[in-house]
Image (cartoon, rainbow, N blue to C red; front, side):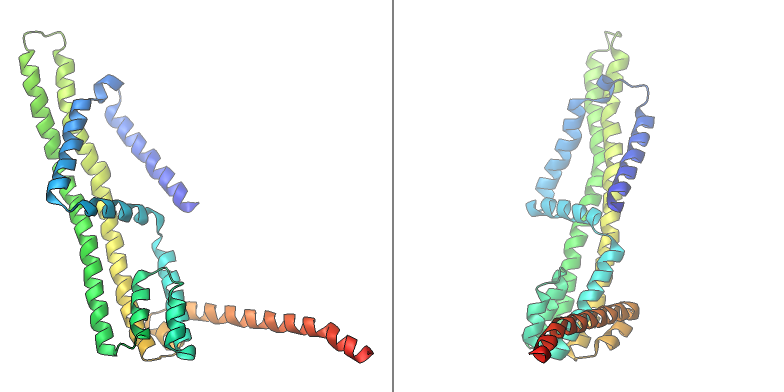
Length: 280
C-alpha cells in the first residue's frame, strides 16, 4: 500500500513537471514521430551494438525489483533468516541447514549455506563468497553503466534529430507560412532527449546505485554471519556481531509463545482423557 501511494505521488509530480514544460503547446506540436524515432531508435541501436543482449532484460528486471523492495524490510528478513539458519545448524547439523536454506529468498545466503552443508572449510568458504560477491556487484555495476550511457546518449541523439529537422526546414525557407511550426517540431527532438535523460534514465541509474550499495552491505553482513555459522556460534553471538540483538530477542519471544501455546493445547487435549480414565 505504501509503495503504491509512493508511486502515485511520483507519477503525479512528474505529470505536473511535464505539464509545466509543455503548457500552451498543442498535441500536434508536442508529438513528433520522426523525432521519437531518432531518439528511441538511436538508443536501441547503440544498446544493441555496444552491450550484450541479455543486459537490457537484466536491467529492466533490476529496475522493477528496485521499486518492489523496501530496504528496511529486506534487511530485517535477511537477519531473521540468518539467525534461524544459525540455530538450525547448531542444533541439527549440515543436512538440516541445507534443507532449511531452501526456504530463504536471499540467493547469496542460500549459496553460502550450501557451501557450509557441503563441508567447505572456513578459508575456502570465505574465498568462494568473496568471488561471488564480486561477481554479483560487477553485474549490478554493468547495469548502472548501461543506464548512464543511455543518459549521456539521449540529449546527443536529441540534438542530432534537431539538426536533421532543421535541414528539412532549410528546404522550406521560401514558404514562411509554416516556418514557425516547422522550427518548433525541429526542437522537439532536443526536448525528448532532455526529458528522457533527466526525468527517466538519470533517476533510474541513481536508484540502481542505491540498491547496489545496499546489496553490497547485505552481502558483507552475510559473509560475516556465515563465518559464524560455520564455526557453530550461538545465534545470540552472531546477532551481537550484526547489531541484531532486538531481532534475536523477537525470535526468542516468538518461540517461547509458540511453546507455551503448544503446552496449553496439550494440557487441554489431555484433560478430558484424564477425566474419562478416572470416571472409568
